Length: 410
Image (cartoon, rainbow, N blue to C red; front, side, top):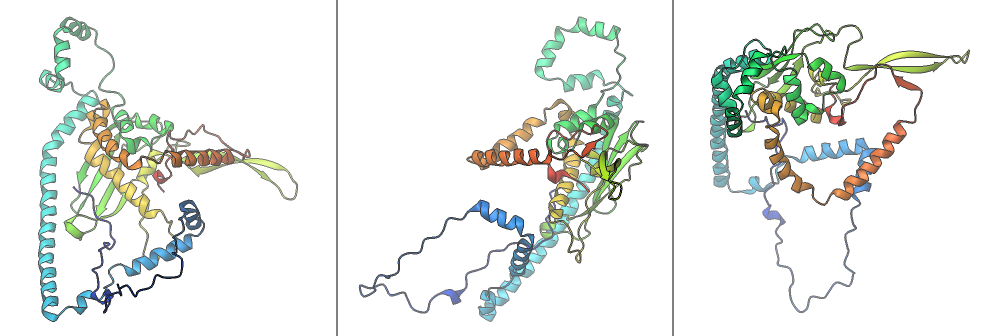
């Protein structure tokens, strides 16, 4: 399923207007005198200063965005200036385009039905995979042979005796421990969300699967064995599309809803405990109090951001980016992780991701100096953040290896 198109107006180029053409040609003759005023040179734009200006004035950014938004789709007057027969032909083309849009919507609906048809065929394979991962079944010889590469088949010929020994001395380990955690840590977008504390809980993942809804949308289902963190056997997250399709017939993402996690006492991975010193204004005595504050965790994934309402003026400026990120994470699990879990577990899927990275890398050539400056600024920010010694974390919370502000879920 292709990505939905954002619910915003397209940026169509405005046709040139005949009214802008001068009535008389410019004087190009020997009588034309050269201007006496010196040529005006454009000043070099200081990008850093501009960025700083906008960062300090969010109201200015909002005003500019509002002004630009009001200009999108505004007629230049060119179409209205055309003769009536030409305007009639333009209207006719619009009618044909609407018929095309109807066919596109039908096409996307048939694609969805085809996806559902083959999903029913995939389901027994996913169940077979889950049984092997959790030690309920063993793969057949045919499955093992089909899964081996050419090099592995050649090595297997020389390892027949070793195989007999391995069979005689069966390992007490059943299934494939930490299968889903390992697969998720190899998937870049998911790995950035997983903290060291999360890993202890995600080791209990027994399966990740999905299902289609009766209405446009899908549900992700995470199954867990009994663990010390929460009582849920399954935790789900459901992605809903809008009933009406967008431009090109694509489904438009509407919102997502996640299950409430029933955390056991003092085991909530989405918060951390901090110790704060408080001073009494009257007695001047100090005391230490403990407070819980939100923290980075993969399990914030089940508390997705809420779309802004039309009359909400206080919504965070990055809400659209966070909604897009949340949707993309769901798509990555649905389209990449679940269908090819074994390739993510072994790391083989990374080679396909790296091919895309190599293509994108060319776009960033020549930016090394800017990145170094940004790193220096980040170091200064970290040093300034570490000055406060009045607070301390109580539970040994560890942050993700790679901080990503946009990965925060609320």
